Amino acid sequence: MIPSDDDVAVQPAFDELGRLSFAEHSLESFLQRVTALAAGVLPGEPVTSLTILGGKRPATVAASGDLAQRLDALQYRRGAGPCLTAASTGRTAEIVDTRSPSEWPEFAAEAAAAGCGSVLSFPLPVRESVAGALTVYARQFTVADRRTRELISRFADYAVVPISNMYLYESALERAEHLAAALDSRAVIDQAKGVLMERFKLTPDQAFQALTRVSMETNTKVRDIAERFVRTGELSGF
Image 1 (tube, rainbow, N blue to C red):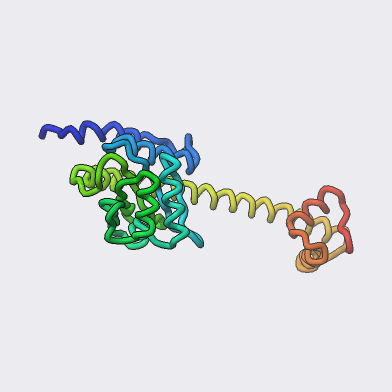
Image 2 (cartoon, rainbow, N blue to C red):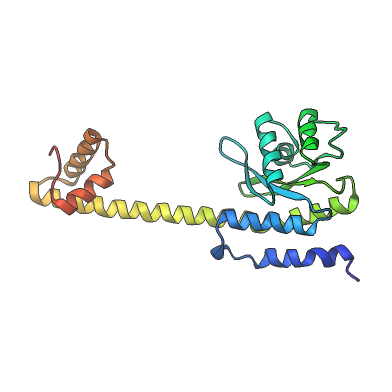
């Protein structure tokens, strides 16, 4: 099968997505590279953004230009728009012509005034806990163009794999850091308990209660109380 011109155009971007190393990128720089690649392979020199739903509010985790950031933020303030609809419903949302929109007329008017002619938000296929959308803000073409829609769809389908994997990688790192911190805290607390037990002939429970009492009285974490006691031999209030 002879590859189409579009296949030839987008394959380098797909190849680079496959080569992106999690260890060499922060989550922010990784996602920023994804939006830059999207803007680079789509026709008409668009600006693109990635919206992720999570926590208390949506967030633009990466954008290829200031216009995309501003138009995303406008939708967040209004609580409605293509990127929010695509991210929350899993369905493509679009404004074919911002001068004559069928939905979101107030947002469309502001987008048109900012120089955006059309908008297409394509949902990222759901992977694990990642729900979001890739949004294209176009100046020189309309989202009704079949070629553009197919390219965006292919890119989003391909990009969701490394995006989801990067989120999982970051989550695993965070869990590992929390576990390491918990183990460190437990070790120093056990050390402080041992000193208290030997010095004051306390049981393990009594030693821990002494640490927690000082913690509550001083509004200080038990770990910090234990670390200071091990270092200085002083336990204020005991």
